Length: 151
Image (cartoon, rainbow, N blue to C red; front, side):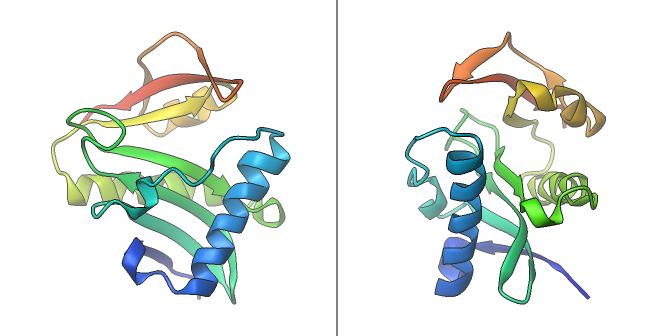
């Protein structure tokens, strides 16, 4: 049975780290044709938690949750939400975001959760309890909007 793992950076073994970074680059840099610095030092922050589902050594789905103050003042954030091409359409995206929300709520109870969502995913995130909190803006040449999930 596959189980979600939620760990700090220091608990990632080198093979898992390599595979989760490979998935992020495959999705955000290669698939989306978006050259940008994927390694942003936020992974290393002491309070950052990495959430992933792994089968054998392959990462099927991944996200990270960032503590208050890392991306947004006073609130945690969910980011780098991605599912492997081979594992899409299996409901893992919803399960992943659900796990990220639960992790934020358990770690920082009673605090809103922020995301910078790609605009085409607005309805998906709304179905997970997020509401739009900005007009669309470009982030790495991709339309995004700030969304908040009230505590």
